[in-house]
Structures are given as structure tokens and as C-alpha cells.
Amino acid sequence: MRDPARLEALLDRTSDFVLWVDRRGVVVEANAAASGLADVVDLLPEIAYTAAEARGTWTGDVQVLARNGRMLDASAVVVEVDGLFAVVLRDISDRKAQESLLRRMAERDSLTGLRNRHVLLSHLEQAVAGASRGRTGALLYIDLDHLKQVNDTGGHAAGDAYLTEFAAALENAVRAEDLVARVGGDEFAVLMRSVPPQGALEVAAGVSDRLSGMAVSASIGVAVIDGSSQPDDVVMQADEACYAAKAKGGNRVELYDAP
Image 1 (tube, rainbow, N blue to C red):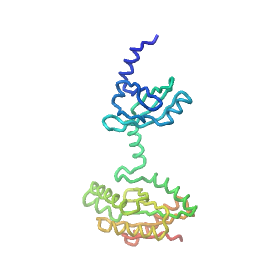
Image 2: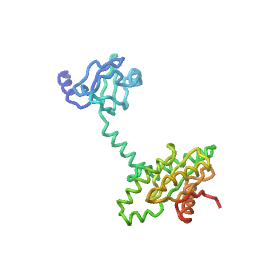
Image 3: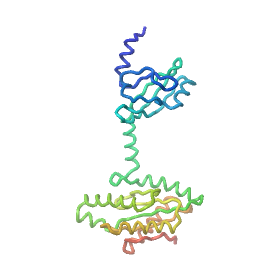
Image 4: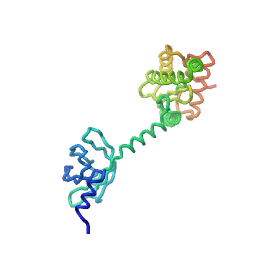
């Protein structure tokens, strides 16, 4: 036979938030841990109640407000019993933060914080598909000129500091909707959607002008994304145009011209 006192003691010692809530969302009873939550009526989404009424139970992730003002991520289990809802919430904020960090590490360059090559290629595939439906875009491939001189003079720490500074300047020099990525040691790329070739060249020229006052200039190659080339080909074209800019002395913009 169950001992109500023993069960109540167990609920008060658990770190999970355990509550009884009515259909209006008002908390009727709660364990000791739940006293750390703010007094919020809309604790659960409407789907939690309707699903629990229909199936007897509902599970999902929610966000709840703690009394200290912190927003917590929580996994929720809701069970309907005689018109009331037993709710068990488990704080998973640390797990969510770790998952977010892992996603960022998988998508971002560790030094500059820019997107990495993998993310660039994924978005480039979408841009190529969109260009085949008339949404022309462009890929800018950027190679820093003479970064080795910075490394030789100030060491790799100085080079890393410059790369970080350059990345921030590059993001500020392009449109807010453009995707900026670091694709190699001193190589960067900018993916632009819904832009005509002339518009892409103007942005590239603006990037070059914006960076002209920095310690190292940049060679920029531009490849048009019109749906006629596969993503790998677009990268190759932008890279070839960048190489042509560097071969002409650097600090210039070149548009890929198919042979």
C-alpha cells in the first residue's frame, strides 16, 4: 500500500519541478523545487492541455521563468487526471547550452567566428538551386595579400589578431543578408543572393575600398551564380578569378570570365 507521506517526501526532495495545474493554467499544488519558478499562469502551451486531454499525456520541451529572472529550458511531462494536470518539468538548460555550443563549433570558424567552409557549401547549393529559378547571385572569393609579412614581423599571434580584425571588417563591408565564411588560412568567401553581376562587383569594390586602410590588402574573385554551374564549379570559378587578381599584383577585383 502506498504511503502518501513517503510519496510527498520524495516529491519534495527531487530537483524536478512537480506541479498540479488546472485547465486555466493556474498552479493548484507544487513541490518544494517548484517554488523556484515565477508565478506564471501560462506555464504550458495550449497543445499540452489538449493533447493530455485527448491522449492522457503529453511530452515536449518548454521554457519557464525562474524567480531569479532566468529563463530555463525544461523537458515537460503532462498527465491529465480527473480534470487536473500533473506536470513534471526537468531543467535541461545546461544540456541545451551544450548542444548550442556544439552546433556553433560545427558551423563556425574557431578563430574568427565566421561560418566555415561546410556551411558555405551547404548554402551555396541552395543559392545555385535558387538561381536556376531566376534568382541570380554571386560568390566572392577573397585571398589576403602578403599576410606572411605580418606573421614574419609580429609572429602568428599578430597574424591571428589581424585575421580576426579582417573578418569583422569584412562582415561590416557587405550586406547584412550576405553569408561570410572563412574557408582557409587567409582565404574568405562571401555568398550573395539575389544580386546582379554588376551589383556583386560594386559590393566587391566596396569591400576592397573598406579594407584599403588596413595592414594587408585583398585579392577578390567574383563568380556569378546563375544556375548554369554546380556549386563546386562556382567555387572553382571564384577561386580562379581571385588567382587572376593576385597575379595582377593583388589589391583588386576580378570577375570570372569563362574561356
